Every structure is written in structure tokens, then in C-alpha cells.
Image (cartoon, rainbow, N blue to C red; front, side):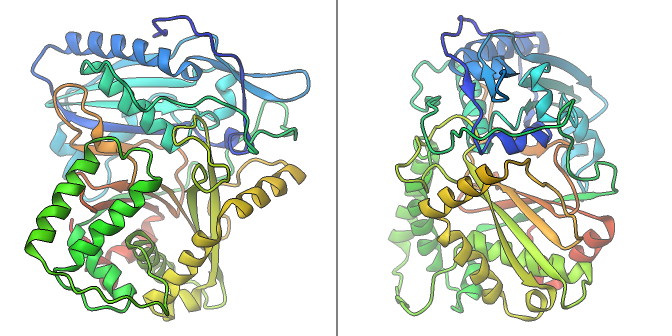
Length: 469
């Protein structure tokens, strides 16, 4: 066990209407693959333990436990009970063994602790477990963290801070906000079965998992196609404008990404004379929505669904900046809602890419503060856990975000070679979006499908023409 290096003074934190539904979900499992440092492994373990202890002082809830009070409300008690720290050895596995296969190898799943652990068990399990796996020529640092306590925004803020502490950082601008004073804090009580909830999907179904990588150029071409424009090299400038615009709602724009993007923009601006034509009659579809639409169409085709079958594409959205008044950009906890978009399989497969992207775009744009509040009120009328899964064989769920600073985790000897996840919360149709390692608008999609659907996707020419790996 590793404990905070200072005693916590933070009081109990009540779980919100965004936290409570996650009690039936697995612990989040995310981590980074690194080259092996030049110093001995025991020195690395000592460095990480010390750094983790210091980081936990900045994130006291992660060293706590869940408690349920006499009225049925669930809280995080910041009691310094500690987190698990595991040093594992898999020296028969090389970096190439992890990165070379077309599909993500099963060995990666062993790099995480608390495998398939349900978040409700945070009443007695640690809220966080860090596993360091020594490989033949590399190291994998994996975190498993309770999904009722943390979402992706909070997870990567912790992970980035952990890395920064280990490499000797002293000044930290991204301080987590632990206030519990928003509309997300409710008087509604979630009634749970004796022993707690279970996951809502089949954990034993056969699955195939692959990382599909998309270069900046491929995504620009895809976006131009979605918006019915001819792609030119000058579209690079528009892409950077889009990235810079998104940074206004991105809590991580204080890191080097902003400087990198600005430098790229200046370089392109000096070498291009963009012709900007504004079309006010149609909505501009973003790069990511274009990519989601492409995947929605391809997976629907691969599933060979009846034309009348209703398909669902769910997207998780960050509510921190959508609410009025806004939450702090580093609000600690879950502040996400799921936006479903519905369309018949026939429409998704036969209509053009822009039509599919418009359905996603309209739903995301409509999810402002009023809609966030409506979702909160709807949950309060019927408190329930989140129904994660693909119950009708026609659903997809997009999680994570290419905006998360996953490759900013330099513990002192270099950035990650790759980001990977464990078995947690995976089912046919679960998609996770990661930034590409090269940054500058590249995207990796971690796609989990039934083996038959994956084979169909991999033979879909419209989809695969944009894939770079």
C-alpha cells in the first residue's frame, strides 16, 4: 500500500448524480507503455512510490473509501486508507509484442490491477491501484480507478500530476476542485440491491479489439468530404483554427500542447495563403463528428442489420463547461452525460456521410445547460445505474476523448510510446477515442466489437481508406 505523505483535512464528498450511475461500472483501467529507463528498476519503483504518495496528498479522495450513511447517501471519505501499488514482472513480453499485432494482445490486460472490479466495491477496495509492469525492454504504468469517483478529465489530471511530481515538478496550476455545490449534488437516493449492483453487460462474450489510427491528413480529408468541400493543403490551417477553438473549453491547454499547436499554426500560416469561404447555410461538422459518423456507418454495414432496425450511437460529453454557471475545469469527479443519437440501420447505411454526421452534430449542439439540467431532473425522478452495454446488437458507445492529454505523462525519461486500456467496461460496440501520439489532430480509436463485426469493419473499403495503420 501507498499512503499520502500528509494527513488529509478534506471532509467527506457526496457522490453526485453523475457519479452514482457509475457504481455498476468497472473501475477505469488506463495506462502508458514506456521505454525502460536507464536507471535500475528498484530505483524506478522507489521513485514512483514516493511520487504517488506526494500526488495523493493533492488528490485525497483517491486514497479514501466509499461509505453509505444511514439515509442511503454514498460519500467518499478521505481517510488516507491508501492505494494499492503492485510491481509485476513480464520480462518475456517486449514492446514489439504489444505494438506489432493487428489486434490488441491479451497480454495487455494483465498490466492492470482490480480487473473487472465493480465500482460499488470501493466500500472495501482501494479507490485506486497502480501497477508497474517490468517488460523485456520497457515498462507499463497502469492505473485502475473507481469510476464512481472519477471520470476521464479527472483521471488524466491525476495521471499528469503524478508524472509531473515524479520528474521533480514543484508548481502545479491544475489543482483539482473538490467543491460539491452544483446542481449535480442531489437529495435523491439511489436504491441498490443487497451486496451492490452488477455490471449490465456480458463480461464473457467473445470480443476483438483493435487500435485504428488516423493521420491528420486523413482526418482533414474526411472532414472536407463530410462538409462537401474539396480538400486542399490549406485545410490544415482551418484544422488548427478548430483545435485552437476547442482549447477554450479544454482544461489542459496550459501544457505544451498549446505551444505545439501555435507553432504548427504559425508554420502553416507562413507557408499557405488560405482561401476562406464562409457558408452560413449549413452547419460546420467537426473532424471528430465526421470520424464518428464514418465509424457508425461502417459498423452498421458490418453488422448486417435489417433496414428497419434502430441503431444507437452514444457519445459521452463533458458537462463542466456546458452548465451555467460553469463548473471548474478541474472539478474532481464525474461530470459527464451520455448523448444518444438514433437512426434506422437503413438510413445509416444508405444516406451520405454528412447526413449521419448532422444527426450527431445536432444532438451535441443541443446539449447545453438546460439539457444537462433536464437530464439531472430525469435521473432524480428515477435514480438508476447506467445501463452500459449493447442490449439490442445495434448500439455503439463512444467514450474517452482525443482532447485528453494522455501523452503528456513524462515521468522523467520520456513520453509514452502508446496508451492502452484493460478489460474494464468492454463489450461489442464500445469505442474509446485517444489522441494520436504525434498530436496535431491525429486520433486513435480503440474499437471493441464481436469478432465477426470486426472482420467486416476491417474489410470495409470506405472506412479503411482513412486508416493509417
